[in-house]
Image (cartoon, rainbow, N blue to C red; front, side, top):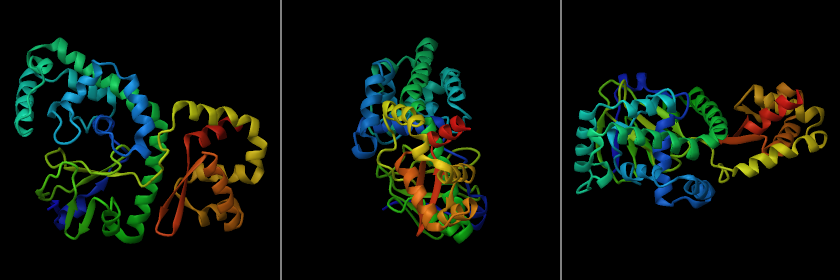
Length: 336
């Protein structure tokens, strides 16, 4: 049996899309991925690089954020505007809450023991400060190096979801979130969870916040008790297996652009790239009209730009949606 989220008409009216991934939530999911070793094609290179950069002290987070199941509640700051705010919230957690959350977390783990180093967290502000520092360090090494890629994918995904809503309303949006693990059978959203969690969630008029996730590429995460409303993650609508390019590859792409500027761009291709950058999520037909070229020519130029790493293309049914990558916008800025 799946985990079921029940919607009323009021819930559907209040369901909305988050503007992008949430920093602390992405870190939580990334820490889980580091431990389980799954999805090697998509995350293998990222996982190897990240594990090499993490010192033993930072890996303490693995004890409190397991591969599946619950994380310790006082590390959940999905609503924080940025990672700095989330880190400071962890650092300022009252001792009584730390003790209460650790006890509840151990109880939900079906026999999970509190790690020896963490048993004094509720009474040792220095140790809690070190844990907050570990959160900041982990984000800096595991998530931040790929932020530009994540921003590009998030913009492309938002364009895709807006198009789904425009063409088919919330029914199409909810049906297309993650067909492998999220099934919309109105008025119920059925979730296949990595932990195997089952049961029923009644939104009771609160609606649902849909949060895109780059690291949450397969299974969803959900929090029914979040304020001001419950949230659910879904994977960004891009399926690139080379999403997390090693930094040396990104540097190589950027460093070779000036040498090949004339051959790569020329007037028409520069116009195509500029159009994609100015109108993220544009279709091939829209691209052709805005650039003043034929659809066949627009498709050909978009393919060259995508192969060169200067644009991303996602598909909505039979429609290709184009968005400039960080390398593409950087090139435009340099050329300009």
